[in-house]
View 1: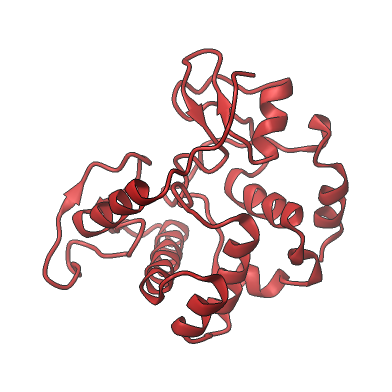
View 2 (view 1 turned 90 degrees about the horizontal axis):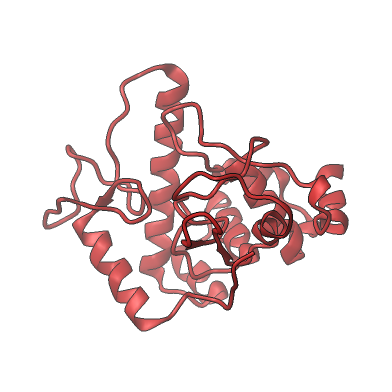
Length: 219
């Protein structure tokens, strides 16, 4: 475990110690790969706070943190709540959001530790049914996450190589040339990415089955 991650666990409550995030400069969304998790996985990842810090650092980097709707910078209490993974109300536009809003993890119902475990198990080629049993999710959900990570890695590679980016669903990774079995089409994605009709239906059903909102107040 890197010293930064261990230090983060002890100091993430202090606003001055946390970095801020900006929109990615490249075409690929900010994310992390299965290999990133596999290379850095260690005992420290059993701690939820370390997992949260590692994931948010990978997604948001070292730029300025802003509201994902109106892009007004966060400060003080709001910034602290952001890095603690809590729900925030923007004083400028009144929108509620979290550090995962409009990221590739937006709408995820797993906690940060479960996300790390899922990524590490996928990196080590654990069977989907075994991963599903350990994390108490469906094998189909495991396969969807695997496709999502694969799609993100393809997008990152194309952005780094300067090749034309192929539009891919942020959930399953399907494209115009490789649609879902039975066919699908593009729909509006509330997270601001690319989403196919099949995955939009699945996400809508999950949101109807479980309320993901947590208590929060304007800061």
